[in-house]
Image 1: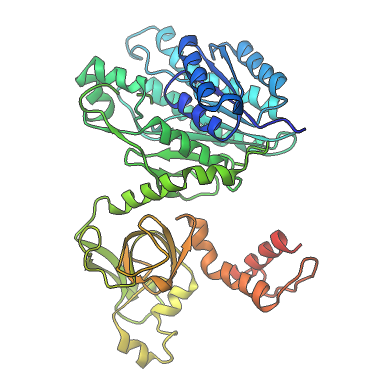
Image 2: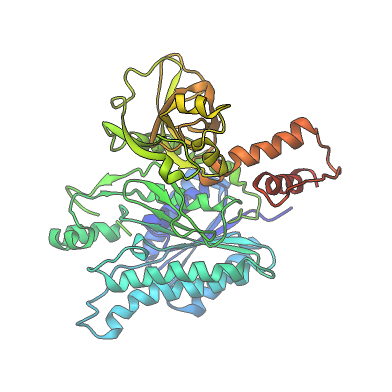
Amino acid sequence: MAPRSSALVTGAAAGIGAALARSLAARGYALTLLDLHAPGLEEVAAELRRKHGDGVAVRTARLDVTDATAQAAAFAAHVDAFGGLDVACLNAGIAEQGVVLEDRKEVWQRTVDVNLTAVMTGTQAAAAAMKGRGGTILAVASAGAFFPMPAAPAYAASKAGVLNFVRSQAVVLARPPYKVALHCVCPEFVDTALVRNVIDESAEKARRLMGSTDVKLLSAEFVAESALSLLDPGTPTGTALLIRQNGTLMRPRSPHGGSWTRPVDAGSSSSRGGGGGGGSRGSGGGVSSGAASADVAEPLRAARAAWAASDWPASFRKVQVVRLSTAFRDAVQIVASPLPPPGGAGLPPGTLLLRRAYVGINASDINYTSGRYYGSKKAAEAKLPFDAGFESVSVVAAVGAGTAGFAVGDCAATLTYDGFAEWSVLPAKRAIKVPRASADVVALLTSGLTASIALEESARLQKGETVLVTAAAGGTGQFALQVWRQVWR
């Protein structure tokens, strides 16, 4: 019998660490929970045992993560107990200690030791446990890795160190003999004891740290669920997941460039009135990423709906073709267009109101601005001005009466000539329901679909058959080769 999937969480006695433990237990992982605060650790473990009974195995141990030898021993003990390690969540962290410009180095050095050095030694220990069998390491950093924090410079430096350690070390860990995925999670202010303590201590201190005493704090539970989304096998190793205060997820430093944004339900709570909190590949052991995704599907849909409804403008911007030209800049201008009122009141039956998340840019846009898709220049000029942009993926913000197949918060891909617009109203029959609003979905829409249809529908290709692809270096040709390798090779 194969060993059950297992995970280890540091800083598991409260906050994000406890939330990670709950989410992992719900997915069936056997757990080792580590923390310096033993009573809190035992409370979390007792809660999980009451809820899951024999369905979850939970080990606990008191650990100071700055003791590298003790941390390595804790990882080794986990492997001895469960036969391996699939997921390591390096979550232990502390707030700013002392004042860098005034105190002795030893005072603020502990912030660096706990938040950065312990992540490095924890990665070392996790990699040793996973070597040769794979797994995923999640390091919990902070949005302070991206943004300056004048009130907490040592903290911000330590978290920026985690971010760049992860992005650098991930390259090596992904290769043999390790084959381990390494990611980091960078939330803004979270409703944990760490932040609540700052708010309780002083409104002025909270204002210096967060810029306001009325910040809507992220919930630890949604930070944990968002973090575990990185276990998806399609996540590029070295991914940094930035969780903004409004609940938006971003990958601003993707290993392959660009940024990725997805709205999620932040499960937020306001800091007003008291207190404030803290700040890949698959698991490799049998807990499917599909099951994990199903666990958060409804919260994500609700959160996407909230994102689509946020900051609802009276008008939106779009790109229109105003003159025919192969020079895109000369052919177009940005114009304002009225948006239906909040909630989409008055939408025509059978239509969707979409808030755009991603659009694609390709050679077809130049063909379009030059009028080549209208039969003749005269026919194209008669259509001026017309909207530009072809491929896009959006979140459904409102649904017209009698519209079937879509709900607010669903994701929709479109191949219509209004892609370069912040919002769009179009018939639901012209939208394609997709599982997520992400850049890879846009990339599949034209070249990917062309290749897929050619191989699957037209050629009816069978496994083991060979394919001759001409113009294989082009967009469709490259997709054809990749699709063939993945499906029929």
